[in-house]
Length: 376
Length: 161
Image (cartoon, rainbow over the protein chains, first blue to last red):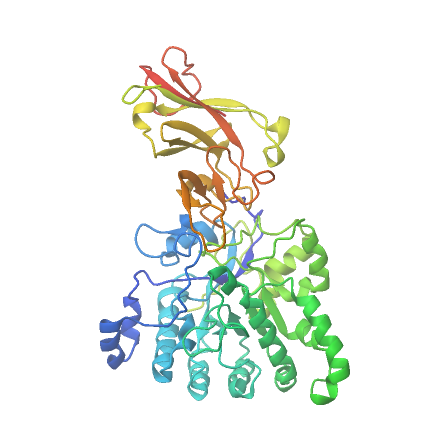
């Protein structure tokens, strides 16, 4: 069993809540009537590529509740994650509807996003005070997406706007600009979670198309994140929106510094082509971009990560995530090498607390794990 | 031992271990796991001996015991799926074998041979600790050991842990 974290509260930036049943019946009441008829007949019907996953049908073998899917049972989530590791705040990123950007029908995608956002507030964020939520948007219709952020983004339980790594254009592209603008205006980080690469209407998962196997699909994650990160920097997103924060979830971390060395070097000679990029690309990253840790790279010697953490300025750019209840879950007590205490505190608490504006240490450890501030 | 239906003890003995096991600090112990009649092939039991959780498996009538802690991130390994696996071969060849001899960690899917505790991907360097298991007739068993649902009749399976 996991060892306790010594009473120090932590923040988990990637936790997945699911619907109990595959038909997602709890979502139906939040959909317009016309779509309710459709989903009765066809199901929610979101495209995927068709790879298998890992673990036990994609999840930790011990995370299946007596009935329903992993991530659908709040009591089990409390037992295996929130209580087990003294998680003061956990950010829910959903599951089944996250790939709604793959749908060809923009109106249906936007309706699903609205329905999920209402559902997650009512069924999760209003029930357990340690939970916070990412809201979904349908990038097929940018004005509707902006409207949805304005409608729901001020809810105290909603802490970021979420899209998938798989996309039709890199996220710095002017097509998405109104979304970045409203994120900045409302103080909501713009978050990317791995997934949807090459599915539905999205672009190919890599420049050479689809790999044959799931393990290949997992390796397009950093490729996509490199593309989106470069786009955000060179399209001037952080110059236009100086308070914008971007979070890259589940796409790797060790690649960051060597990649930024390339960007900084290229920028010196090519700066004149994008003169609005006023600083070395790495400086935008230190200030504006955060990375969720799971799945943390596992070098031959765990201590080698400590060197990479220095290159990557992990004290500013890395936030802990477990990915519970997925099979590639990172344990807060086992996944990292032994860290200096101040760095551990930055990664497991402070950077995320600053990023999301959480009330710090709402409750003294050992008195109660529940923060006093309710999101509802 | 043709012991179906008879009462025997499954017992495990813990001795000093390596690595995370803690060498001399590792507790030593021996525990009675249960009656053979309640422990048919294909079943497992998870017991605690000397403060550590150990999984005992009956694989086709033979008993094996593994530490219930994955050497990767400490997951409860022995709660994973018991299965076979695809045997390494030529590209595009899929040969399934070793049925019921492999346990897959419930978290990250690492596969271990139940018979040896070795991983499939690095059998010489990455392994989980194994323990001795014996099947012993009643009368030779010290039932003052940590005992799990044991009667004093017939034969027992002893975990030497």
